Length: 189
Image (tube, rainbow, N blue to C red; front, side, top):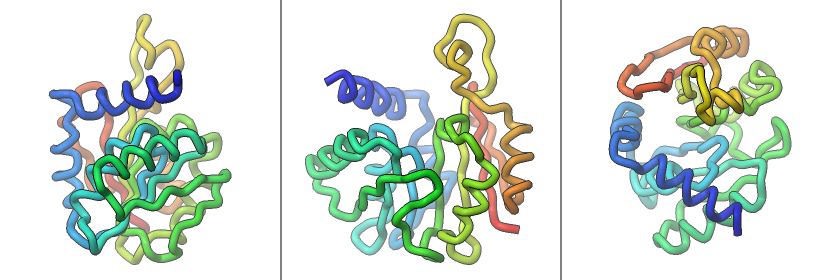
């Protein structure tokens, strides 16, 4: 019950006016027929939006470490009639994804949860197509009594850039339209 409330809250936050959700998806250039892995899918807002964009010929993998999150996203997709989403329970770096089959990995507010981001993204390279990309959105460091500050729900951009470089990725583009968040797109070196 509490989990469902929290996941609905995450989806409201993601879809709120000013969240930049449509602009994020537009900036990524998501096309019909693509395969997208939503890493840390949470409440599934972006999984559903990606599923609409990639259409019937595309596929979205909602990836999460919590079964209850995936069950929530599965119910949401059923309610919305989305049949092109596969639900993947991640076990560390192991994921049931097609090797060499993912066009875009999307990690929103997930990077700070990864205990070993370098090895995680080194391992993830095997799932990407040649020319595949990884999008990372994270809160910028904040001070004061906010949730982000109190629970360290952020990663400084310079740390993201360093860790992704160590994992064998290079920065393709950095977007600056999300207030309070970094939004970086990486490709494989």
